[in-house]
Length: 302
Ligand code: GLU
Image (tube, rainbow, N blue to C red; front, side):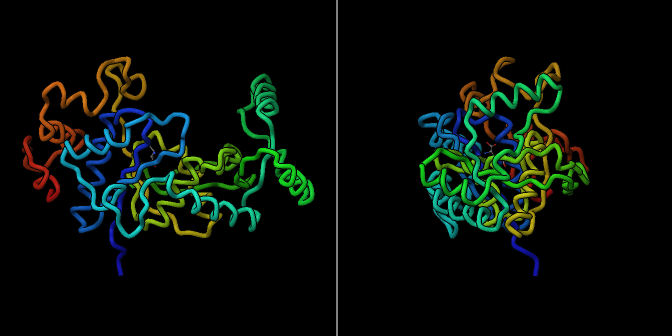
């Protein structure tokens, strides 16, 4: 039996929603509708330092203002609630422990000073700055002593030292990245919160997400996620990384410095949400009959 299509939009409340996020949400939304599936909203608020007060409410408001309401989400609930990551800390903890127990992850007690020094040495030796895996070889006893002494720690993934990490992207085709350039990434931070990488993989798996459609700035994170799926022994979802909006001069992601980028600001200037969506629809795609004006419903059918 084919799996029911389930997709998600997973913004972080670190500020106003970028207009590119509306397009990402639109693609996920139409894919769910076209396939009779589910569209989820998940709030990824694991970066407590960068979180902005009131951003969650504003993000939810603006996605709805663009007409892209979700089937499951923080305010609506659903079979996989809660849909806000800061309310799922126990789940991440349990899974991180599972990786420790199976030796797929390890405790790292390195101080910021040590990490800075390693980094500085690598940079001056013209090597890519990466964690030097120092704590990977600590003995059980050493680890236990430090834990008993309440030393601060993070949990890192054991990244295989010599392995091709391969995944297929629906847009880009096969992508191969060698594990030597993948860091022993932090999974759990010292504040007890998971990193984005751990949270996203656990939630996408537990929430039964079938397709991950997100901006292509996340491609470099995907090998880390693939390694995590492997470490858990879970099947990987299907990936599609979509091109992002660039600045007019083609220098990087469309940014505040070059003008308005918040999804709300376009509505505030009087652009109709339907017109904005229509603009996104025919950006990089067009129907065979060259129609230029479409409703969301027509777009879903096409
Ligand atoms: N929380 C990430 C963001 O802010 C989500 C990336 C993803 O879709 O995996 O965009």
